[in-house]
Amino acid sequence: KYVNKRPVGHGIPGVLFSISKNNGIIRSHNLYSSIITSALTVGFGGSVGLEGPTVATGGAIGSNIGKAFKLSYKEITLLISCACAGALSAIFKAPIAGIVFALEVIALDLTMWAVVPLLIASATAALTSYLLLGQNVLYQFDLTEQFHMGQIHWYLMLGAGVGLLSVYFTKSYIRISGFFEKIGSPWKRLLLAGGVLGVIIFFFPPLYGEGYEVVNQELRGEYLHLFENTFFEGWDQSFALVIIYILAIIFIKVIATTLTFAAGGIGGIFAPTLFMGANTGLLFGLVLNQLGVDVSLSNMTLVGMGAMIAGVVHAPLTAIFLIAEITGGYELFFPLMLAATISYGTARYFVKNSVYTVQLAKRVELMTHHKDRNILLMMKVTDLIETNFKTVRPDQSLRDLVQVITTSSRNIYPVVDEQNKFQGIVKLDDIRHIMFNQEMYDVTRISDLMVTPEWTVDTNEQMEEVARKFTESGRYNFPVLQKGKYLGFVSRARVFSSYREMLKHFSED
Image (cartoon, rainbow, N blue to C red):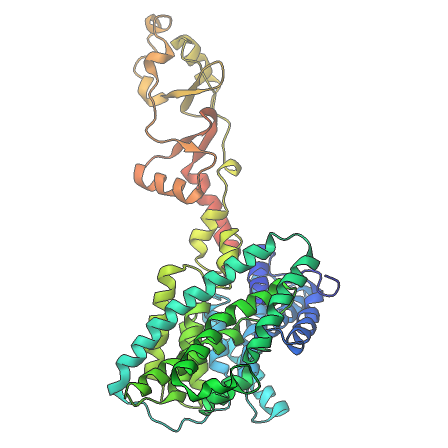
């Protein structure tokens, strides 16, 4: 409330919002606020990661540099993407994953104009990280057990299971966040969420902090460390109790993460996602080994991490290259590809947007993904109404209509009653054969000439539906109504002209 004046949760949605709705401008306080508050959050045990705020801070640096040099929207967006790619590349020492992250999550268009700066930024960031921090990496792992093609079906099953778990992660995050958003007082949220989080971590210490050390122990096969200094220390003697404990950690992790955000903490969901994926892969490997199937626990753990990133973040390529670069090779590339793809497909079937974009998409504030559809969603019928159509009443004569025609520049004449209720339209082409026959002027009523259009548009309709009507009907104009009352017309030309202008503004190329 007092340090980070506009908290952005796990950071990356704030970057996407700035690109979509704020011309790429990120407030200058984000240069320091997210990174400081996230460090404090994790330092005090918040069950979140540091990657999201770090990436968001990089995006803020790129945005403010672009603003200082008065660059265009396209150039600012590129700087933000390069900074985000560089941040992820430096964190994991994974330059390829950083580039792919910018393309998949930030949704930068794949053009040479964008790719070359991304390559330079990501490679430079990884090199700088090596120079300043040495060979140390967040996840320390040496691949010692080879992948065997005969085990591929187990990795496919792991991918499907992790995909369903990704759906649980996203939906739980949204529902718990929604519950706490209804609590108006930040102090009440802090006490309730913080209190529950404290109880959870008291009983499940592995959920304390970002979980890097826990995952590293599991990658080394030392998963029994999960039980050290807990109330369940004796459970490691029973396989069934080990499975129950790991299951509890997996399902409670997302609750702990969301409670951290609800209490006012700042952090990222990248580390919690990797934590859940690692434990899911470990759990699956333990069950298979118990059933007599010889699979590598460390390999299962790594593939689970990649599959979870693919499902939660909707970034399968980022997941594949991130895990491949973490392991220092591509021996697990094939199972990673299959598990990540299946996890992504499963999650996408149930949840159309990632955890980063779901709330932005719900508020129609997302322009970086599915630009064509989102532009239509942003457009409003009421902003495109044309009102220079002369109205007539059904009881008027043809003579009255001819007089109106002489002062009108349009060839369609809406017919309304005294309460402005829409009755129909008269088309100039339909009356051309009688409009010069003066004998018909006083005996013909407009009600005899009007037709009821098959297609109309309501002011509450989404522009996507209006565009569909234009495509299906082949019409060029639709009457716009509000509770049956006539407001004007919306034209195909104006809709698509406005669409092209907005698409041009948000285009990267």
